[in-house]
Image 1 (cartoon, rainbow over the protein chains, first blue to last red):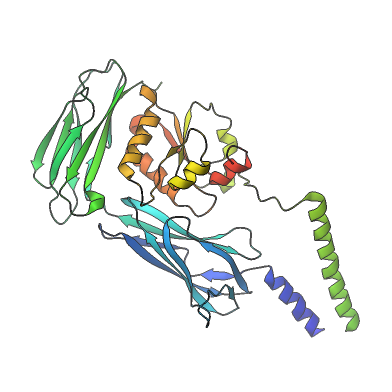
Image 2 (tube, chains in turn orange, blue):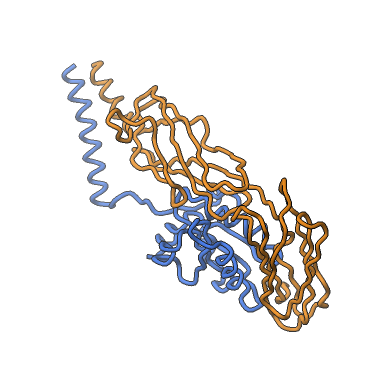
Length: 224
Length: 157
């Protein structure tokens, strides 16, 4: 009888995966020049056996690993009750500044909803432009509007090049404090017709992610 | 004990036969995306709601890598991804050209990624909200279920 009970419990345990993570969200504030970040998600198997059938980090990851490995160096996918391990991810940071989530997805045997492990990375914005877009409604008085630029870094970042894409949006770059603060003043020639332009900016920032910037200027229909 | 064991195995065998029969008659389990209000996170939307909108009111944004977007992105979508291989400023410019629509901007921008685990759509949504949404006058949504929801609805293949 004991055997039968054990057998039934054994069968039912295969239906459920109980991989308990200390956290499913790791938050990291990265340096401005970071290109890769790593994160670990320690876990313990509780209640029943856990079996990973698939693990991936959709497109945004260099590697996702389950550790420790089996003695033969293969990936350990079946975990018994009481065992501890970790999921390790190494991510490429792309072009983003600000806050971005990167995820690892674990599909477990007997569980419909995959486990998501999220790494929330914040990369400082060194060359801050407010706002990113200036707009005028069609027919609005074409008065001057301003982009304000502030450097949030421990050393100056100089604005070294600028170019506009539309003659309808003449602009002037004003240096408030070289390397630290600028303004771009834009006054459309006309707001009679819709139009869009860009102002491209290049800085002397050595960190590639923060070197180039762009802002938009538009004349558009008024929203009712 | 023998009787008990036979009984236990009998139950398991019957349950398995039942499951097999159900599979044969009804088919495999439904793994399609089911969306409801209580499942939605902040900023997400169900495809069923989108399908009630005028299709001229929204622009699709695909947050997956270029090769996948080119292979099976929804018609009319724009690529905007945090993929390292891309020049993000160029993608941003193309997006702005598309959403601006000759001075009559789209009212809504709908972002999709894959089904699960793709933080890209949320990151793109946050970026668009912060940089452009208010000035251009559009709302930003992330599609619940992502590309899989579009595929289940037969909108992509």
